[in-house]
Length: 167
Image (cartoon, rainbow, N blue to C red; front, side, top):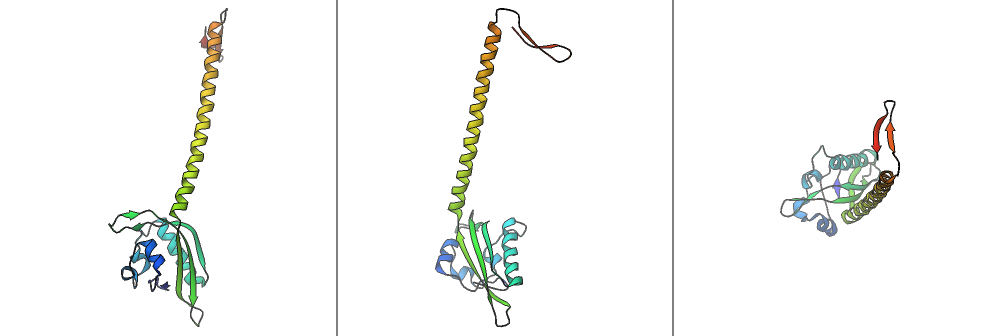
């Protein structure tokens, strides 16, 4: 849970576990301070835009998938993919008072999808390679037939009649 200034005011145990944080690490801290990201990065821009949309419109916003890396206990960055829903809670005047951020770590799903896509790429590359082998074999057969012809054969090209192949 965040206030309208994006200060973290509450987090459940599941959120703490998936983000590898303790309540004392994040409560009272601004979201981008608790979970730093380069302000020029696509991740930061996407998340900031979603929060701004919620505050300005007073309506829920969703991010289907966002790469947002987080720091491990040793300080190294862990590549993570998330799905996020930001739901506003309005005060009596209809102004956004809090934002409930519901995030789901979809890193494993994203990696499986990437593997599936890469497998498709490998299958297509294998098919192209097989076609190239077939064309190479066919070209070799034609060349062998050409070389074995009982008479003179030549393949000339262009108006200058340049020899390209001759037996």
